[in-house]
Image (cartoon, rainbow, N blue to C red):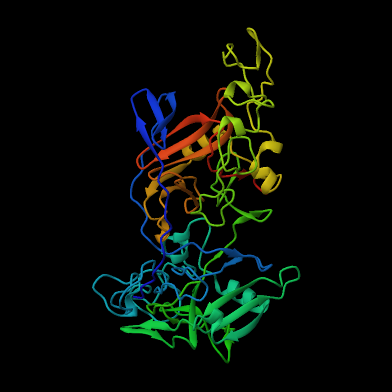
Length: 477
């Protein structure tokens, strides 16, 4: 098995949480910023995810699906990534029938394949009975549980034969013998689709893995799995190429399923104004962004902003807060998003004992960074939308998300038909994370989601501090 060395991303320390039975203290840089009375509503989670490579970036080439810019297990286009036997999700030191996942226990030849079987007249005992009748499962396309690409979450998957054929028919192909001075050869595939002619992907010449032979043909031949079974049960369809030819066979002839080959994922994720979203099947139909505002990858924390502000600053204090009267420097000078909260002694939203504020409790689009930086379809989620997300997902803390060195929270859908969909929320503190909602708490405080290694709760924090944003948008349907 090849070793892929990835540089870890450093996390800056600076915050921790102390919890009591009825009060939470938010502590930053050694100073208590807020003491919050609340009733904990804990959600526990466990079983951290194992490393599997950085998630790729989807490339829109004007096709019916988007193609990843890297192989599974790779961090750059020229890297090989991981090799897998067809229908397996773990790499191995050897690739043989004897250690193939979809074989009857104790057997060592393809005649005992026990999953993904077609009526191929081979009369083998696991998919034909004694009378020669086909009794196999008839499955010809990888299921998500057996697809190495689904480890990336969202709706990433291994492309089918038809997906590869569409790619081949709609791209120009140029052989590169030393791509980006990396020493790796392969094909550069550039879109021919109008409006997408600047989009391309690079497929390195990966070779393949057979028995103890690693990287057969590495650097001049390539073999990529499809999600499609071959014409016979023991084979699966793959794409192969070298400097002279790029082969998309017209028939479904395949190669033995036990071979170790690379996977280049595709996705059909919703994309709203240039930003990818995940459909978790939520009752409201809301889609959640794959990345924070200001981040280009799911593991990036992105831009930290004060509540109701749309640009980053060097200092986050009341004196620099946007929604204060001119010359104001304390929270009692807030002049927008004010509510009847009993702050009658000094809050400018009271005239004596009479509330005179605006009564606004949800961020307006002009003050919503998701709307102003992304598009009118995107916005900061309300507290109710965070609650819906938590109630329809499972949750687990990971210390090293796909070998990036980033810790955080994985939320996986529990909604039928969407259970392979998830989002990752990177921690913005060392062992915890806090994200703004669009909902006001009291005039000086806004609601947020706070999570740690073993629990989470809804809380609130002062509006002038900076936190990350994970946007939502409506379904495109």
